[in-house]
Length: 157
Image (cartoon, one colour):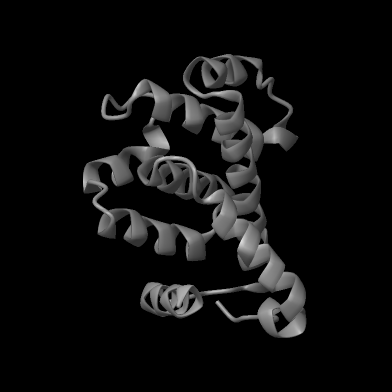
């Protein structure tokens, strides 16, 4: 993949704000849940960059290979909790919004397992990951996971 444009160089102030939003909505929910949601949305969107980054990140943070590998078939796999299933269903409903499917069932499951505040946090997370996917796919971005970890540590310092 060839990078078409570096959005961080082209619009640094906007990308700094976008990155801050991304970090803000990554907190507040269980890290494992956030990783599953991020990875699943990236799979649906076909974002190789994000799938690579987040599969490795999930594994490094203790997620099992089984749960990472089975994520595309989460509805049939017995290794996810009801809360994770509700989050994954909501992720699919919102990520596939343009396909015209009803999200009513996904929302009912979401309400059963998440507080209203958590529903908003999760929805914002799904929106942010979909945005990152569109930036990466649209501009041909590829970030090595080791470089991403180093950048995150530097930004946190």
